[in-house]
Length: 80
Image 1 (tube, rainbow, N blue to C red):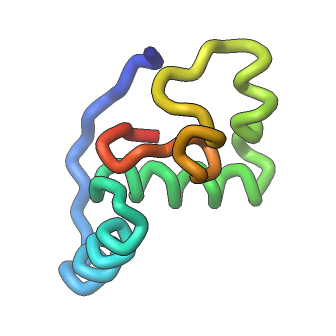
Image 2 (tube, rainbow, N blue to C red):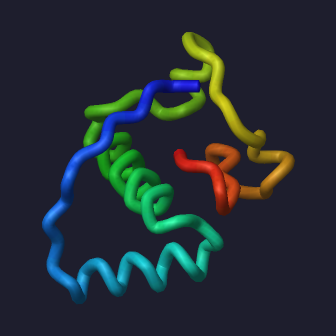
């Protein structure tokens, strides 16, 4: 499993509440959803390789997309 780093995030309470509702709707933890949104944004901007390209160079932990029906194989309890 890839190493995770912790950091403090200061965020507007309204933004946090909106992201929490979205995470709940998608059955993700807040942390997993924030990472999912950041990953999507970075990939769109060309600043991070898509997961399919990363999978060829490093193993991914968790469930596959076919098991969960979610892009990247995200499960509610699994961080992205």
